[in-house]
Image (cartoon, rainbow, N blue to C red; front, side, top):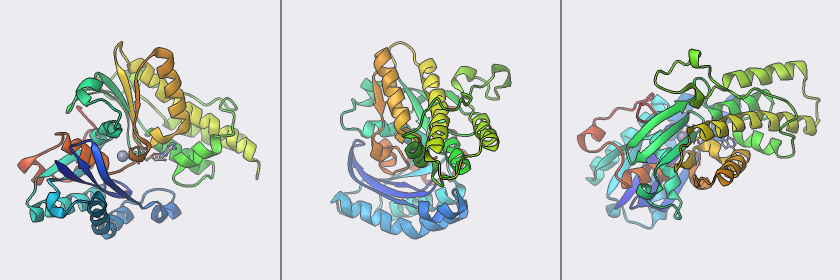
Length: 348
Ligand code: KG4
Ligand code: ZN
């Protein structure tokens, strides 16, 4: 079964071909980052227009690089939410048209569910039936969630951020530090030579009496907006000396440490005996997060499945993979699906 995946939920135009849900035959990603950089963040209208321009070429390349002919594509899978409305619409409309033209089924995929599936694109991963019970930490620019995975399509949301996502915390922090956009990789780099204990920033916790998500445990929810404000106040009181890379490195490392500690703590609290831990999404590229989660997993003897680097940030291999494994909306439900910007992450 060869699935062509299409992903346009945010600022990456992506297409990929995956065999049998596990073997990635091609993975093409066109990043719009240069178009959004002057604005310091993603501009939804620019994202949608840019998808429209780039998608035909990106899809063509993905099929060409897979080495398959068009008639060997068995299904077309596409993200239908959550994400930016205009951006989603471009991919969804293109995928509907393509499926009709090829006479092949359309499969509608939830972007967050696909991020979780991305850990299975590591060829050394056992099949999902064997990898469960899993706790998945999804950390991206739009989402920060802890999800219990019991099988394909069987998820329970354990906790999530009540304000900013971890990726947003990186992006906003980098902006305050003058490190530019996208902020995650910039902070990761700047922090490398810094002291993570240089500045004491708050570790985002949610007070149980303030939690606005009924049914979720406050212990498993995150809050990052206070951290961003703490950085703002710190920089007001102790402005960065111009040209002093050492002070910048210490502040960046300390800020990163606060985000990473909150995420690692959340995982620690969510894990029950016998669980394995899966980590995915753009922020799972962060070197300090990978290091601290690896230490925690080693210390506690927990199998840790980190999404392969190529599939952490937005990509279409995870979309085609999940669809090829049997996930997603099918048949008339897929053809009639609308772009759903606020599709709940999973099982909510
Ligand atoms: O998963 P993703 O590509 O898109 C969404 O679904 O949102 O994640 C993008 C986020 C951005 O906020 C970006 O700053 C962050 O991932 N990111 C990182 C790193 N690389 C990307 N954050 C921390 N450290 C990194 N190395
Ligand atoms: Zn994403």
